[in-house]
Image (cartoon, rainbow, N blue to C red; front, side, top):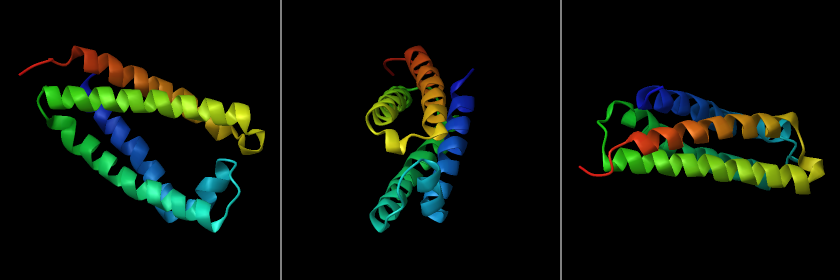
Length: 128
């Protein structure tokens, strides 16, 4: 369990989501229980476009030495996964028409990723 492995897994996982968001936005939205509209497709592509930067940072930071910057990224990503999980839980609870099995998969994967990020962030040096 090390930072390099985590950032590699993260880049691949989020990279697959980005590819689906950009190349198959309607299918990706529909598989998540969303009604496919032009607005949903455009939003799906926009989120995919922004997430490319996150994928690249994860990939390029894999070999970076331990530092405050890497610790900040690990902490931020971990908190991001926690918030993502909470939002998906809220969506599943409040919008039954959007419910799909993917939501439960996202919650599980996101909580695992959150725990992994936050655990490794605690192990990073706080200064230097």
